[in-house]
Length: 247
Length: 263
Image (cartoon, rainbow over all chains, first blue to last red; front, side):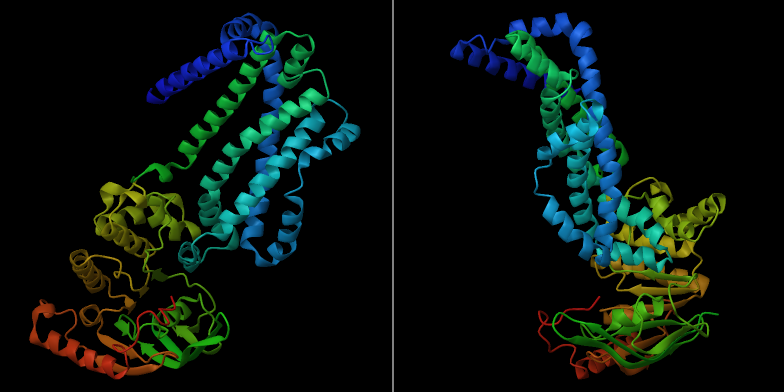
């Protein structure tokens, strides 16, 4: 409840700031909140919601794949010095490359549908989760491992009981941070190619000089980000309950 | 029958810039059901000896035998209790206590029964769904003990299990350790920094020399476990005897900031 009130307060503050800015700039390219929200409500079921579904599907699918691939590989690399000596240089070489530059390549190879967008976001999320999971696995206290190994745990059991749960909070943090990147990349890839998704809608409205509709699309995109972030936050609170006790 | 035998154990491990000799020809025999305390100057390899008995450190020379069999890895009925309790913060009290049984593939009904009995024994039955983060230091140590009890361990290896606790909790848990030993008659090897603890909980007290660790002296302590032993003159005499032996090993004249404990 308190959280909900917090959101209301933040939204009001943002709307006030937006309105002031719109008045100060006085350009049709920056309409005030009123026309944008009225368009948002008017176009929600006909235009915005269907586009939001396209976008949501792309970003959820790619974040899931990125996490499902990045987390286990990162944990394995982090716990195996041999694997790490091979994989770490590769990761450090490829991690700083802005993956977004591969969009043209992906468009040529995979067409302009869902596939190149999902592939690109997956690639970006994959690296962020991989690097975090690797570091988290390396930082696990020796005592935790020792006590479980002394019980006769196999390598798999050590992973299940120690490595995976120990790294889970860090993986969730990385996932929450990567929602921002994922949605930014989603916007870019949807606006460059294809005819669906909120990114396309925003750019299309811009092209039609329908600025209040463009802002309705921006609101929808922000909404997508907030919902994703909150879902991850709730999932973490549920799965990592121990991090919230005793403080 | 869990006799423990260390036969001329050498342990050398790679230090930062040169190999470190932790133990050299360290020999020790612990009879079945005997509680032995190991004490020695900081960094004398006490913990290493214990880890070799637990099968977590491979000796570079010599060998450790438990119940007549060479130790090659963790043994089913050996329980190791570490200084920081070895608890997993993401598991509840119940699951922490059940971890050993789960790892060893004991069925859930049997696990539940044994874990609940163990938690009751250490006084944690009401906390089975709490996380370690919600427990006090003393309760965490009780939980680590419950894990060992649930395993029905016949050999308890303890590496300074109480050193992180305040004095009152510490004495309370020393009493609990003694009670449990009197009841179960398991073999126990306790590594400790505390002379009083060693005399309270060890029927024999083994004094190790500074690194590389060897057995410097063994003090018999037959009164251990007697009612009210802690407040008898014999107890103080034994402590003083040990203090003298430790002083002779240089336990009191080293800079505590140089060469910390190798645990």
